[in-house]
Image 1: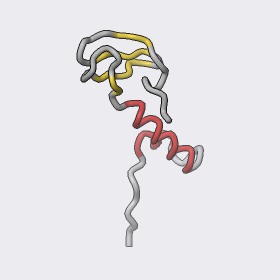
Image 2 (image 1 turned 120 degrees about the vertical axis):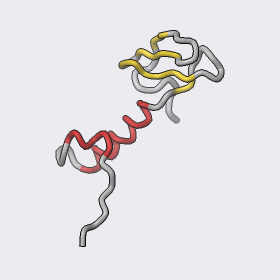
Image 3 (image 1 turned 90 degrees about the vertical axis):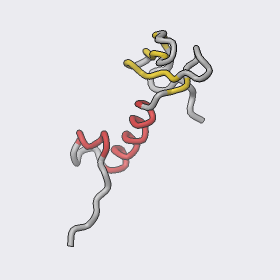
Image 4 (image 1 turned 90 degrees about the horizontal axis):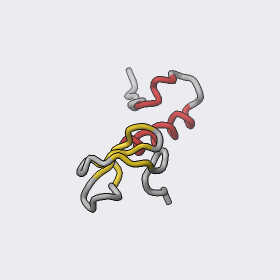
Length: 75
């Protein structure tokens, strides 16, 4: 009987390389990095990451610099 497998996610591009724990951590980091973050320019606005350290407010259209991966520090 075939067993059910988990979805691989973004780390699937590495195949079997680097080990399971590293690929699991990579999936957690990249999924939260790709989500929209709260915008500092508008209380209800969201910001999307364009590239490392460059963000764009989706509500106002302003492009600004911030942290490389997240706008707010993770605690």
